[in-house]
Length: 379
Length: 130
Ligand SMILES: Nc1ncnc2c1ncn2[C@@H]1O[C@H](COP(=O)(O)OP(=O)(O)O)[C@@H](O)[C@H]1O
Ligand SMILES: [Mg+2]
Image (cartoon, rainbow over all chains, first blue to last red; front, top):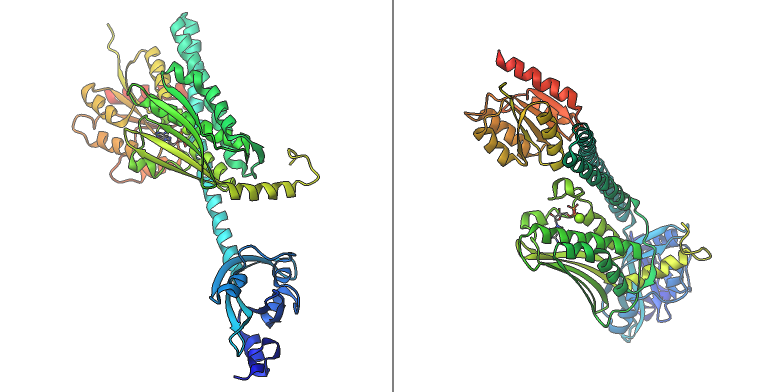
């Protein structure tokens, strides 16, 4: 091979035709990350690019991308790949998978890197559509389940009304009390159903503020300590020393903890064990903020565990809405976190929320950028 | 003393159970309650009620299964059953089209109009007496 043919800036016509005909984006960059060659496909989608930094053209940014695969290839001569989102010449988002490989001159010096990218935008769009369809399906399911819960609540209210008036008619105090309790209970159910349903269907971005996770835990303990002690359940916070403040949506996390703790208390009530206990823990592990809610109550059967995160699944009959865990998971995912559960039937359960700090920070930066010039609380 | 008719109320919704049992008791029935299908079947056999109201909340096995068991059981198959459901009219179509199941004697959707329910119960009992 002659030197001129390996130098990408001096390719002859044969290479040129081949280069321009391949059905993917191909760019060749030098050690300064400037594009020295780009093929027709690239020009079509990203625009004209000679001698401009590749990150400026691919992504409209003015510094190198993090985890740049070309940089790695310059370092070790090996092939690297990564998934990226770029900006096309019309401002459109372009999802692509890029592979980078070394281009050496005749003296085997690594002078250039070649970047070959496949456009996966249509695939991404399809995925997004599937997700949307799933969401819509969930809404349908939700409405059906909602109608069912409402019918039972209506009947409970109707029943309460009837029993109260019957008690009045017969001057039967016990009956009046019984009917009144029914009214109260079903009224409360309406409130919690509506609240759960609203927070489930909101689909908003979390409103992140820098808060102390330990303080959030203590708020929950204050909220539930009376209910717990009335049922002789111990409620214990465990806040690790190393836990720092974090960008979280305080009302969202409050909802999550409320849901997990009320479930844990229910599980303790459902077991006839003595010495039941609910522990709310917050700790830090390898850049991940972790909340744990642990109980030694009734535990969860294997078969049931598979269903607990689905819409309206409840084992509590009319006492539950079956929305608590679903809502909880949704809020956690909006924070870029995950939820998991470990449980053994009869022995109790431990629910864990994991929030990678890196992701929280990213979200926080995004949200402060988006709300620039606006007070944090306005929509 | 006048012979009181016996009604078995099966519903896993506690408040609905209280509601219906109070209502029937006030209308001079002897009431037996059951909170789930298993207990319902036991009571249907041991207490031999004159009529049963059965809650089928979801078109899932448990309630439908109980209906089938009641309709095929030696000692229970003559007892008229009124189905009360929280699901929509789809359930009625579902029950009517199932060949192992006879259409129930009565069919009501929650929230139930109690006077209509009482009228239906009396009607069924009258028909059974003949
Ligand atoms: N700590 C726990 N111990 C045992 N079972 C649990 C626990 N948390 C949740 N579950 C199970 O998961 C189901 C769904 O919970 P959730 O979505 O909060 O709805 P709900 O509390 O209204 O039933 C509960 O009905 C229960 O069966
Ligand atoms: Mg719950």
